[in-house]
Image (cartoon, rainbow, N blue to C red; front, side, top):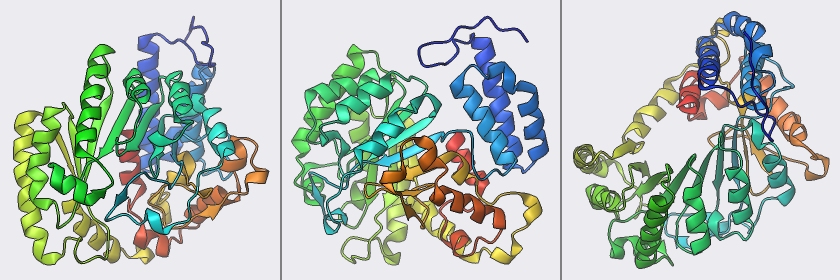
Length: 399
C-alpha cells in the first residue's frame, strides 16, 4: 500500500479519509480479537499493518498498544491511551453528600500535569476532575493546550458555578469534548440545599452563556448532566429531563448516592419508587431525544454478580481478566496512580523519579498491576472490581 501523506506539526500523518477509516477498522479488529483472547490474530494484523501507519504517532501507538496487550508485555513501548487526572480535591462548594472536606487539601504536582500534556499526541481520552477544576488558575492553559490535539476526546467534570466568561467561551471551541455538569436538583430550593454554597441562578446564567457560545462557534461539544439520587431529590428525576431540554443538554446520568448517611441514601424500601421515577424520566426523555444513562438500577445486580463470582473458575486459556493496566491510568491529586478510578488498589508515585511519561507508565506501580493480571490470581480484586471483565471494560473504552 502506497501513501503520499504528509506529517503535521505533531508528527501525525494527514491521512486521507479512506486510509484513516481503514486504520480505524484494523484497530477495531485488533480490539475485538483481544476481547475474545484471540491474541494470535492481533499479532498477525500488527505484523501486516504497523509499518503502513508508523509515521502517524497516534495510530501507530494504538496498533502497538493492542499488540502489547496480545503479547502480555509488562514494560510497554506504547504510551497510555486513556488518562484521568484528578487535579485537586479543593472545591468551591460543600455538598451534603460529599466527603472532600474531610481530606487534607491537595493539588496534584504540576510536574505530572506537564508530563501528560507533553504526550497528548498519543492520548485518545483525557479526563480532568476534582474537586472543582474550572476554578484552578492554570486550567485555561490546559484547555488551550488540548485544543491543539483534536484527536483527544477530553472530558471535564464541573459544578459549573464559579467560572469566568473567558473559560465558558473557550470550552465550546474544543469540539471533541464532553462537559459533565453535576446538578442534583431540578429546582432552586432542592439544588441549593444539596449543593451548599451554590446558586441555582448562577448555574442557569452560566448555562445560558454556554448555549450562546455553542451557537456562535457552531460547536459539536457534548454536554451531560450527572444527577446523584438521594432521598432529598429523587422525586425530581423526571423534572431533570425538562431542565436538560431547556438548555439543549442531550444526556443525563442518574447515579446512586454512595453514602452511609441514612438521611441521604436510598434504602431498600425506596428502591421501587426511585425506579418508577426513573422510568417516567426515560419515557419523557425519549420524546425529547435525550439519552438517559441509568447506573442506579444496575448497581444492585452488578454487585450481586461480583459477589457470586468464583475466582477459582478463572480460566487461564480465556485470556486476561482485565486489560486496563495496558492502556489506561488514573493519577490522583495526592500523586497516587492506578489503572482506573474504579480500582481499589493504588500506589504513590515518587515525583523525584518521574521525568517523562515512561517513568510513570512503566513505573513500579503499573508493572505490579500488569504482573497481577498475568498471574490469574485476582483474589480480592475480582470481588470489588466495577468492570467484572475486560470485555465490559474495553467496550466502555471503545464507545
